[in-house]
Length: 294
Image (cartoon, rainbow, N blue to C red):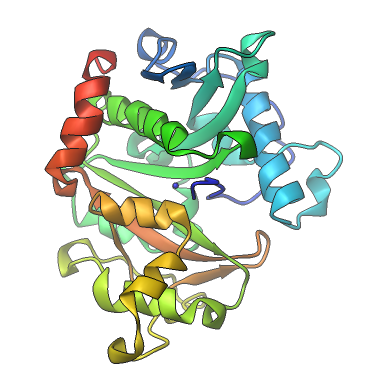
């Protein structure tokens, strides 16, 4: 989730350029899920809106942050096989002129467990042992969040809040029990983030009940400094805003980090059981978005 909101969870495949909406729950997805001022959040309704979200992802992940898959440089879209089975949460600035897909200023990608299990799994399976975690909680519905990004001019508290209104309405509508997904530090050297990663390792780890480990062969330790050498204040300041936002509402991180050379990031895995979300955040987001969740 950075204030700049560039987070992604997927590998790239140009074979799925513009995808359809055959999996969509149209009775729910076409209406607004949240609103603050001129900003409105809802799910993508058609291929044009999904393509616009892919173009925004490309602009941020490739042009701004320097992700490296050259095969997409002609298409100018960040597209992968998971787009076809995901819902795409979009933020619109309704004050902008033109068709709806020209009003999109931010996006988040949502993959529900039931879709993932019949379509080859989650993206996070490539980096973290998510399937093992799901197996331990057969009574909970999991939701993978990723590919979050917002255009520079809209990187504000208000945009984050309207995104969370949409996510909370979605979670309530589909009776989601656990939100999870990758969150990233820029760069491919864990030691460059030693204090922040060590803080996560010492103070923000999941309980044994919710623990999830980086896959064998990709595991890198987050425990890079002794606990007594870590300054909580400077560690938190060094974290991407999205990770800080997850922690504030009750999320915890799994065991180990993973280097994603394609996107130039160090990834950690965030787990957030809905029951662990702080009451004040439920009241804040839930009270505003409850009318959108039915």
